[in-house]
Image (cartoon, one colour):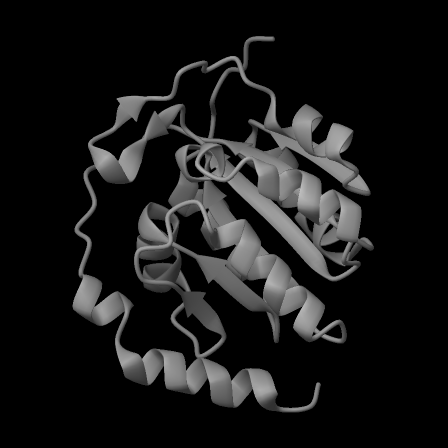
Length: 193
């Protein structure tokens, strides 16, 4: 199936940010760079050297705090590095996990090399792995209309966000992975909901 890409990752994240309250948001690399610029907050969970592990870290947080919603923001190249996480998430089926994958058909953080098969259907994979609900968005207006519903459903919920490759990003690792940010996350995450 061919998709006409009508979205940019930062635009999708701006839409998403309007719906975020007390959820943990897990992101690495390109997704983390865009997300923290748009929504700097204590409940952003950013991990050092964890390419591919966004979904696994999101799963761990969701299992540890079933009373709190967790949103994992992952790139397609990152998901390809840990594709087995879909099956684990589907099997464990945390009701509080939303997994969003920005598909731009590249390993963006590593020089934007193309992924092996741009026709891959991640939402179909997640559906087959046992996710409760799966979506595929390529139109920002439709994403804006449906994002609240996507976030409120019992999970695990999966959505592909078909986005254009972004402009070259500056990865300010010392700022992204500042130990004070991790400390602030832990303090906020431990609080009763």
